Picture 1 (spheres, rainbow, N blue to C red):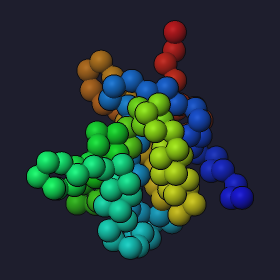
Picture 2 (cartoon, rainbow, N blue to C red):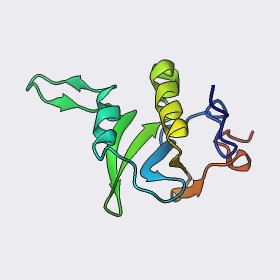
Picture 3 (tube, rainbow, N blue to C red):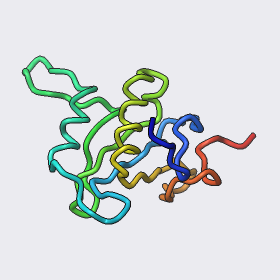
Length: 125
């Protein structure tokens, strides 16, 4: 069993409607992750085919691009709707040492920060 990363605890999340994790296609050491289509492969795990026979990503697990870099967007509500898929995606990112960032909904704007124990997604009462 692989040791858990100290900067991210996937069990320490409570999701609001706009809370999500961004998994970048770059390793912690700065190397680009291969294969280059990994984002599409992982997002397809939660996708369904529409009536037009085209693959439709879910809102909880989809692809995105940030500054030209393909990334995976993982809505934290996936933990409630499909916990097994959520754990699989998080474990994949951890085992491959991919950069993980989170975005947490704020009243005025979104704030991006590296995930660490002090910056959990839990709401304060």
